[in-house]
Structures are given as C-alpha cells and as structure tokens.
Image (cartoon, rainbow, N blue to C red; front, top):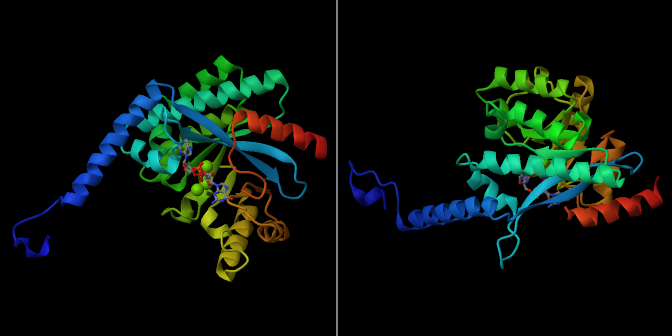
Length: 282
Ligand code: C2E
Ligand code: MG
Ligand code: MG
Ligand code: MG
C-alpha cells in the first residue's frame, strides 16, 4: 500500500494493476491479430424518422469474432485500440467495409439512404484521413451523401482549427457530420457554433431514464431547442420504450435509433429488415 511505503517511495503498480496491464497488453496483441486474420465484422443499427417511422439510415458498429470464441463488444476493445495507432487501422477497416457494403447494397437495390460510421479522434486527425476517404469513395463509387461520420466532442480538444478545416473539406465532398454521445463529453458549447456539423446525437444516458427523471427530460428539451436554433438535426440514441419515443416526438426530435426498433444486426438481417419495412411503410 502506498500509504505505509514511506515518504520517498512512489508505487506505480500493485499486483492487481500489473494483472490489469497484462490483460490489456494481451488484448491489444490479440486485436492486432484480429485485423490481420479478418476477425472483425460490422453490425448495423437502423435509424428512423420519428414523425413517419421511415427508415432513414443505419449506424455501422464494429464487432470482433475471435475464432471459436464469443463475439466481443466494441466497448471492450475500442478503448484499448485507442491507446495506440491500432485504432487508425481498425477505423479505416470499418470505413472501407462500410463503403464496400453500401456499394453492394446500391448494386442490389437495397435502399439504405445513408450509413453512419464512427470515427475516432486519432483517426480523424491523421494527416491522410481526408485523402483516404476520397480514395475510398472513388474506389467504391460512393456518393458523399451516402456517408455520415460520427465524431465525439473530444475530436476538437487541442485541434479546433484542424477539425474545422478538415470537416469543411469533407463536407465539400458531400459527407455529413454528427457529434456522437452529445452532452456526455467535456467540451464547452463554444465550439458548437464554429464546427460545421449537421447533427447532434443525444447520448443514451439522457434518454435511459425518461420519463422517470424529469431532469433528463429538461436536458433533452434544452438540447432540442438549442439544436433547432443552431440548425442541427437531432438523433436520440438508446430509445427503448414507446414512452421515450412519444416524449421525443412531442418535443420535436427528428430521428431515433434504439432497441425499440432494433438492436444492431448483421448485414443480412438488415436487408430483411429493410424489405419488411418497405412492405409496411413505402
Ligand atoms: P455509439 O457510437 O454511441 O453507438 C451506440 C451504442 O449504443 C451501440 O453499442 C449500440 O448497440 C448501443 N445501443 C443502441 N441502441 C441501444 C438501446 O436502445 N439500448 C442500449 N442499452 N444500447 C443501445 P455498441 O455497438 O456496443 O458500440 C459501443 C460503442 O463503441 C459505440 O458507441 C462507439 O463509441 C464504439 N464503436 C463501435 N463501433 C465503432 C467503430 O467502428 N469505430 C469507433 N471508433 N468506435 C466504434
Ligand atoms: Mg456512434
Ligand atoms: Mg452514440
Ligand atoms: Mg454512445
């Protein structure tokens, strides 16, 4: 214990911490292998317009399927990948796979208007990011309007000018931007008036306890009013109940995604979902 170890002794690691570090290193190495061995795959969560129920797009969410083991959630491996440049390779794999899939769907007449792709700060700030996106669009014949990039508030930290410039450049190619997990980060509101983003995604933590928590309802209400004044659309994430959807509809939120309509599903399952949907609504 650090307390009894004497004034000049600084203890960085105890046994438990060492084990934690070992585990992270193991996971990191296995993850490097995952990329090389083609063990990553994308799931897709449908996104809907609240007023009409119409399917407006999907979010690509990465999964890891180690051979002979259970599917691993990105909440387990993305933070570890983000500790090194591995997140750049994983993120670019996700982006390429997303373009490939959109091209395939377009060719097969599967009508998915837009795919949202999560982009990590490190990946976004890589000097070749914008060029790489453009190359992928050319290679797979993807229109910019088919892609929406989700970044978190942390993307601006220490890089405000670079962020604005790069976003503007990508928007000229037709892409759109969302601020993911809005409200859950550390950034101030001042960047919002400068960033050329199109959409805010209200973090799931503010939706979860609606309608039990009136303070969450007040926050959601305020975010919607602010977004409206600033000209952003809003997607609510993590909508699980009819009451939550009814509240969001009443407050004028435009889009939602959540278990109420569907979890993230495989490409094949999304194709069936879209077909069923076209039958019902179209
Ligand atoms: P996110 O981008 O905010 O994605 C939404 C997460 O909430 C997804 O978790 C989704 O499955 C989950 N979710 C959606 N609706 C509901 C709901 O109604 N209830 C509950 N309880 N959960 C819901 P998932 O797929 O585990 O992804 C977790 C996070 O991992 C993502 O959060 C994102 O930050 C990160 N991630 C996933 N794929 C990628 C990727 O390709 N690149 C990067 N950089 N990060 C990714
Ligand atoms: Mg996201
Ligand atoms: Mg999110
Ligand atoms: Mg989230």
